[in-house]
Length: 200
Length: 306
Image (cartoon, chains in turn brown, blue):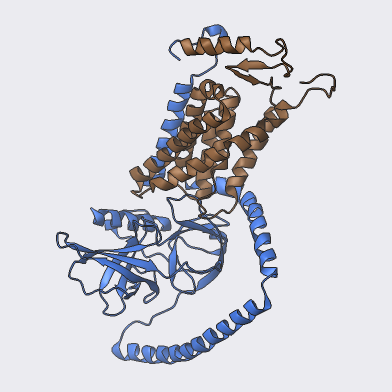
């Protein structure tokens, strides 16, 4: 609490537009200035989710260096727009993924639901941190989802999940988070009107 | 989350309630799918829905493959051609021998009053993609129930047994590889005819022979072939070679690790044998449909493991 107050105080002192500060006006989140974003278009959210799902559908084979694009995109929208993308979406796409992979019906659905719940619960906290720290949260969330999927396998089939595959896959998923962050937020960062006199 | 939102800012059902609902539904689906085949109708529907996307998304890979193939050098092609010619000569020799042997075999079988062996019809298929799930060893092929693929059909390539058709859709079918932990098939050592059951290994891309006594006559390098006892696989199809044997004195059984021979080739062409699944005996549980026999087989293997 004390740290938080200090941080708030710091941001207030360094408020944009203060004497000698020529940075564009922004809203501070902690000590970090952040741009005011435009509202997101639902069509854009759905398009990105479908594209991420189709990326997963590509014939990657057993290449373990390919991250689960859909899971990371799902986490992103859950964190950014928890009111628009919820667990129902996660569940539905999970079922589709199960059919594609020939997995048990509900295995990916359960994993994605858990992932979505974690992201929605943590979304305020995650957004507070800089991008590099967000990676750790994303990694943790993806790992939990992988574990859930592995647990289902153990429970029903008795297949050994290979924990390092889960670790690697989660780490790769977290690695594409910064890229995803910049790409998916780009439409919202765009100015409403082209206006050269305004720096925003 | 400690205090709920006032009704003015009602956000609908709470996240926890949603989590509970969807988790329970998912768990129910998992249990139902693991026990009975009741969800196959839904699965078929979803698969038909996904099928066009899957086919379209295979296109970039095929284009890249074709493009890469265009730049194969002449020397590579010559080399491959020479190698293939050599193999063709060797195989023609063996084919002649096989024809002769088959004739002899038929005569001998007639003399001995045994039933004649029939080789089942086969369907050439192409593997579309491998399942991404690292836990399941499955590939999807481009022929389905529309083309007469039957569940339980053995799948082979030019080197040996690859796996078994475990689920059929109208346009596609799923093949579970031998290396899958839930897959089992009856085999014998070709050197001495010792019978065993091969299971998917605990290490990736291996098979395991279980329930062999620790003093069993088995050596590293022995080739293992199908015994055909299950009535699905034809006899004497290469399965793998023994790579390691752990004979632990404390343990009753030897731990035999095999390296599978099938499924190693780069070509995507496979052969599905159109074998009618044998009737399910009451002991393995009574599913009337054909895919039930595969599951029954699996359940039997599970029971045997215990």
